[in-house]
Image (cartoon, rainbow, N blue to C red; front, top):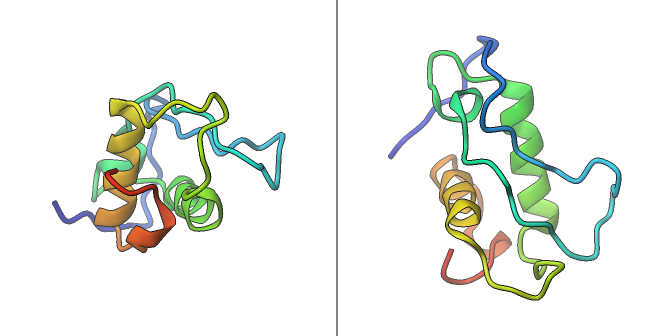
Amino acid sequence: MVLSLTTGCASTKEGRFDAQPATPTPTCQKHQSQEPGTRYTDSENSDPMSVLEMMRFYTANGAKAYCDGKPATATDRQWTRLYRALGGDPSHVPTGN
């Protein structure tokens, strides 16, 4: 799965990534509650700022444990697969994601 970033702006709000904006330097990460939406996955209509926010978060925090101590959910794994598909370093996400 190869995805590319474009300069288009996604009009859909579904599938938003939670980059924990209230905690600029989190010590752990929260589970994602929504699957990646078209703002991240539609190569023609993606929202570059949303994609970059997700990439930045995983680069800085993706290898941190989840705050509840549980493993990644299926939704979390969708996000980490997207991160890697977009060129993210696999060492920045937990093993097995």
